[in-house]
Length: 219
Ligand SMILES: CC(C)(COP(=O)(O)OP(=O)(O)OC[C@H]1O[C@@H](n2cnc3c(N)ncnc32)[C@H](O)[C@@H]1OP(=O)(O)O)[C@@H](O)C(=O)NCCC(=O)NCCS
Image 1 (cartoon, helix red, strand yellow):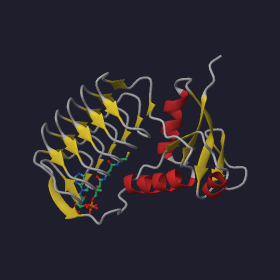
Image 2 (image 1 turned 120 degrees about the horizontal axis):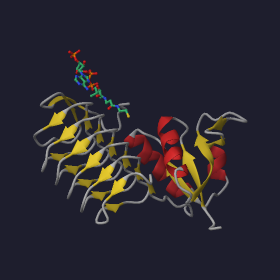
Image 3 (image 1 turned 90 degrees about the horizontal axis):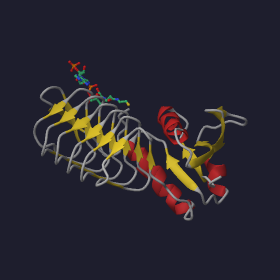
């Protein structure tokens, strides 16, 4: 029997549960458990133990880690901390076996592609991206690091998405559009013109509702 790579999921909420589901849909990894700031003694999640982050970091762990925190800026902050405190750990890419990923797509380490997602030809997804169920990122598009496409978010071809930008449930980004960094595109929005950094875009066609403060939570 092939030896499975050990992996720990950081986070113990909905995104962590979805990642656990994707990982266990195939046999490549052995999920050891979860890590959470608020873990209590004896806590289980998805039937596995939840450890405090401080204990996990002190253990000197050197296996695989996937960071299951949905908020893009928070995910980035936690990843930077883990990379510095656990320098020998690795951050594999997780792809649900029923995602459709083009052979010409490039996906950075730490990214997660959930079931039903489509990653088209010559697409580039940076590090620690989060591509949820049934999201579609079409040919020649680029999603920078720490981007999220929520369920059923869709881009046309040759779209560029800046770092830490969040595309909400079912939104659509028309082809050739450039969306800046740290933006939030609302659920159901249709984006038909380029979007400046730090914009919150709402509606059809999407208009800028306000500017965000970098790192502001949005979920
Ligand atoms: C865009 C969003 C972040 C709110 O941004 P905000 O700048 O804080 O906006 P507000 O909540 O103040 O809402 C501003 C107005 O837009 C409306 N609005 C908010 N979200 C909307 C949406 N998705 N579609 C249409 N109108 C929306 C509000 O009702 C409000 O209308 P009003 O001024 O008439 O009262 C939020 O509505 C959203 O869509 N979040 C993403 C949800 C999602 O996809 N979650 C995925 C989970 S996996």
